[in-house]
Length: 94
Image 1 (cartoon, helix red, strand yellow):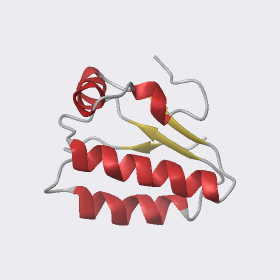
Image 2 (tube, one colour):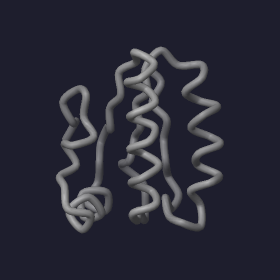
Image 3 (cartoon, helix red, strand yellow):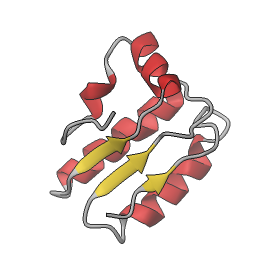
Image 4 (tube, helix red, strand yellow):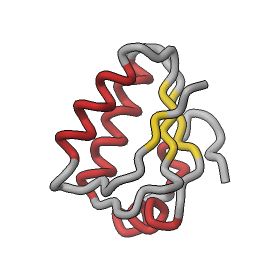
């Protein structure tokens, strides 16, 4: 499995660029796994992009997972009113 790594902010300022990168990556992958261990910032726009990627993967019959979610992603989820497990179609890796 070749995880898509996000190591820069995932925010309103960067979401369009990440969308372009995710679409390019997802078109060649049988499943979509996103590694968030090194993401330094995540806001509601970043969460919305990840949710859209999850929905698109599921609609295409692909598995989706968030790998190595860090505290920044977890806090963004909690601030938005849900747990990071909401993104899982597979168990969320610690």
